[in-house]
Image 1 (cartoon, rainbow, N blue to C red):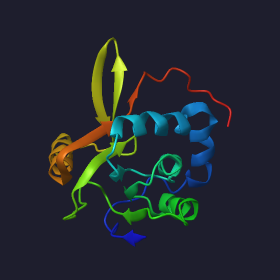
Image 2: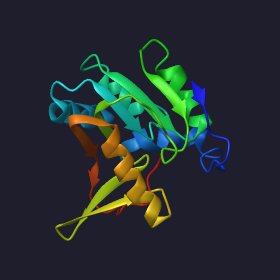
Image 3: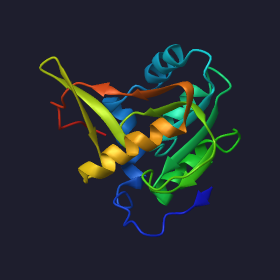
Length: 170
């Protein structure tokens, strides 16, 4: 794992040990997400996973095809879990704020299921949202992702309905 995260305070340190339990308790169905994503990606195999977290989605994707995944996340604690989960794979993990991520590599797809940027559907309107609080940084991120995609590259974002059940047992 490459760690370039030196300037950002890590907000996910306190929940790391509970994160997988939360996300696999019905919040997300990673198997279904991976199947839908695989259908959307088609023959695209070189993938940038933005906000890879603990690697739950990438783990499921690798059961479906031989993806070449680069996962970027600003949380070194999350990536420690991902590194264990994805130890026997060719997934490359990088600890860095996605807004500062630089590479000469062109990806066939960039994916995010909520790690950095996602979408919600409310009242038949789709809205983008992200964990990045500065509007200008969001625009820079989209421009950066566009520049990192190969010709006919695809940016795939999860579209979620509004959250309504905030009380779930873990």
